[in-house]
Length: 567
Image (cartoon, rainbow, N blue to C red; front, side):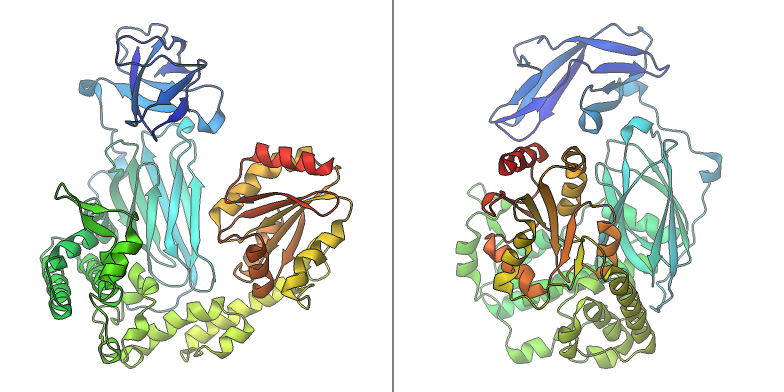
């Protein structure tokens, strides 16, 4: 018997399948026989479904054919639901749990005594990450995540990707990169950590499948000691906001709050300086501390209002009643214009700071009036990202970078976009800038008029939208089933989707593709009363909207609505 404690959202059904089985290390499968409860704490399943009550917890028992008495460990594989079925790995008695043996090449890994961050410079090349996962089994289907909200210089969109592991638990990821960067890596199901990668450098990571949220075992290659330190520090789950709240919650004046923030920042830096880690890791942590300090200084009321002390005396974070709390707190710390322009960055202006993830998030860099004088390259580097994402008109209002290497990045990016635009011209089912002269209020009618007598599914999306792309993948089989029927699939995006990335993605999305202006795109979303993507709309043969969905939709519902629209 396998006794399971299920924790989930209350008042929901959780589905288990009687086709599930246990499998032992020799590959023998032992079928499930029943879900019969063994005592009053365990629930009886209804149609293989477990009801999660208000408390959010339910217990059940799973009965199987007997396994040999000397079985040390086994896995449970749910049946009938493909990738979405339940899998419980390495079920064993605690005393039988064994740590995986280290491969010979990972024994006695030697780390540098210290490492320092490099001065930032553009160096276009490929960063390589090699991963080895101990205890990995093919059915786990883990995906190695690389991202953390960074835009590789030379691209206008965020890099955020998950790479499937090979059956032997290995993976090699190659990332086009322009300079050393701090990125987030790991398994979303287990844990992730920030590490440093660099163009032209190899980072090797040894990991394990584990339930203790500590999957990283060792590093080799680029900044190995620093990466090991970052993993160890990250696992402490340092949360500055709650600590800062406690520091300032009893302050009664603006001056006391500012002094409290300054004292916290100084103490945090002092604590970092005595940590047992590399100089590189310390610098990255100091930059994070400065980022938290700057956020609180410039957006005090907004951050402060996310927290409150409950009747039980505990600190809580909640969006409930946020507006009321913000209205009460909005005058707590308002900087004067003189105070804003006198702000001076310490770590974000260092020559190495573009290596840090917080450098690229610091949209308030212009607070420091001397930022450009202190480090012109860093300033130009930061502005280059905005310049890449801007259209021709928006660029006129932006300061063009002066640094030659930054200018070269922009020239190369523009050349790629130009080649993409030329390749898209006059392609069937692709309408790139073909409707730019249509007034925004006429764009929807203009598109729908092309499909008179047919049902139409309109999908408003963007290349950087994960749920949008997931929707495309989920609906692909449905579209294949509907081939030859009187329905057209219409995909609409805007210049927020980088042209080259759009060109790459639509090659695998069957349908008609429109690249509208920002104004036309905004009109479409306003028309659908939507403030998020993906947004879906279905029209019948007479051009009447019969369905609208905002956010990722159930493909079966979409299919049923299309079939109704075709009648």
